[in-house]
Length: 368
Picture 1 (cartoon, rainbow, N blue to C red):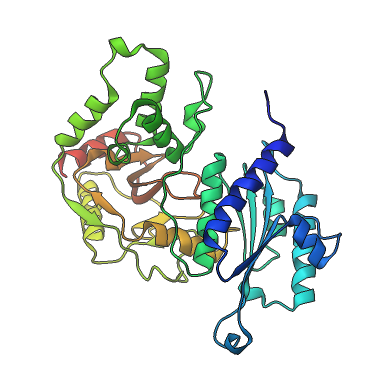
Picture 2 (cartoon, rainbow, N blue to C red):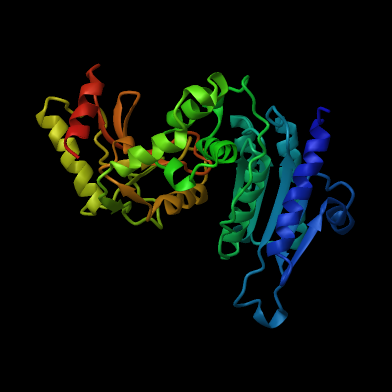
């Protein structure tokens, strides 16, 4: 039986509520839509959840009262801007009535697909605001809860999210995020997640598509292929470090610069210089080794810093050839999945004007 958008929306709300009460009961108040209406008036109809920490009067000068307002939509198309404007108005009315400090109010709009550019601009009228969009409902819930935990300075949850396998041979696996592909491969073929994290998005798609198109009797098991490949790798692990990861500097807009002098920075600089000597010269804006972390400039500073923090400290085997690739006209070092970022995160080593970029990649593979 096909579910309706309203049924999916109700399921979405209940899944989030079940997670919220695990982490925000002691010392917090959680209001659902009915409670919000009872508290603020029947015209406040665009807020599914209000969360705030309970601060004793004697502690108000030391501990800020912080509020979160959440609206959820689970549809296959973007919410109309009228919905966003209504949500913004409801939040503003409550904040004015309660005289809330805008620096202590977090606004989350959770959806299956991203809101439109104009809608995002409307949402960003609220100082701390974000559209959380993930195509898999349970992962979306998980992401929202972690965002709220960060807002309150609490530890993020790291529990495994089970992906519902609703996909079949008609699915365009290339359109799915890498995190979902990994969970699907684990679920279907009982492979190790630590091995799958080393693979590219395209490799995971190949595993799923091959299994759909060819019977298991006539192809080698993916587990054997993966483990054989990994066993052959010489490991040299380096840690990803950024310049002042807790702030965004003036010369950083959508991207974050690597820490100069860090091991990975030195390694990738040597590769860049090697390509240059071999005739593959960098062309274009010379920003330095960096990682793009924003989809566009409308995303907030908080989102920027959150994604930088998610990458900072990750460890990579620099001898693994799978970590190097060509994206467009760039030779890159792949960093893997980055929550909310629409592509695989990467460090741009060089932008090349030559068409023969595969030769540049071969030079890297031969020298790592």
